[in-house]
Image (cartoon, rainbow, N blue to C red):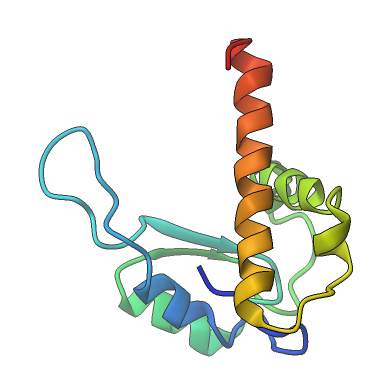
Length: 127
């Protein structure tokens, strides 16, 4: 995981992020080394980035910059937006008090663990 500064465009760390993904293990066979598709909003829809993603053998579901709304991505992105909104419940993350990126990243990972734990507890009734 890597946290980038707030003033960096969305497209800048995208290729490094894709290359840093771990192998995806399936039920059988060799693990996939890359995702099947990449989804993103207009912040990622630069033509060079779409070409790069396609050249990597990944299906691009990136909304092109300047395209009209109604691409259909909202149906799938709702889950992501809902998860990101859950992070705003943690004051320590909402307002950055940390001096180092490492501790800021650690608080994000801790919040992600707590969010997953609470959702699993809600669905299973255990823990």
